[in-house]
Figure 1 (tube, rainbow, N blue to C red):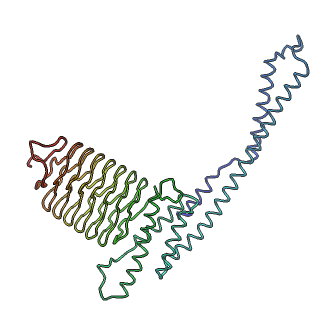
Figure 2: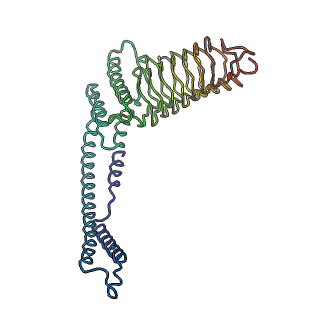
Figure 3: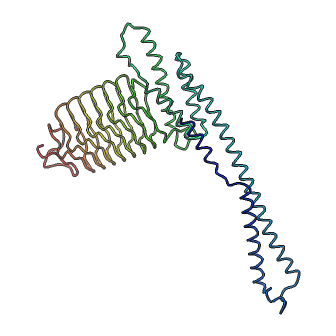
Length: 402
């Protein structure tokens, strides 16, 4: 369906007037302009007094006529230019139709490969679709190829931890499928590393990982600068998923309702400088999520309503210098949330109405030199190693009962 829509859009893009109408209008305009030039010249030379008191000779009049017809000739050249432009547009439209038809044929073959029983054939289909996305004649067709790759990741998937250890056949099938899935993730990551103006960049495309189970792979060094990337309801439950050094500078990246239950998800050294990254209502119940040495300098990072009930979430030596990081109404009931050595020098970090009922939230060695860190209306036990009144740094607000 998306292919058909894209092809219809391509046809709608070529809207040209009938050539007969264009020529008639051009000739009419030429005659009008020629008449205007002639009359203007007549008036300027005082030719209206020709009978009473001649002021110009026949040669001058003849030159004036030649000038008028020169204007007509110029209009004719304009008509030729219009016709040539129209021919070029028609040729371009034909070339686009041919390219789209070839793309559709290759797309069909690649999707068939992706559905094959053999993992090797499926890997070939993955690479074929990625190549098709790079060669797509329109952005819509590129998005279609990427949609199929993301849809493959959303298919039902049983992680290794749920398999019987003695079921060799199931283990082999799992490893084959895992290889295909990780190849898709790697290809998407590689295309997000390209500069936005690179011909093979996928920046700004919609990436839908809704409900995907991640048991490895990653987006290290990727740049999320536009479009929307959905990890809504995704599960990070095994191995390591890597966002090390990733840059979030303009896209909306949505981890809303995601579950971090056993994997190591690593945002070490990541930069959050624009756009929105949303961990709202996410659950951190096991494993490690590492934001160590990350930089929060712009945009919005939301943990609103998130639950920290197990595992470790590390913001050690992270820098909060701008933008907003919002932990409002989050629940800290278990595990460890670590802000050791973090620097708060600008922007807003909001813990208002957060609940601290268990686990350990630690600010040892943290520096508060600017911006706002607000624990107003927070409930429960005071996080450890926060400064004590009355020597609170400017911008740091604690709950009244702390």
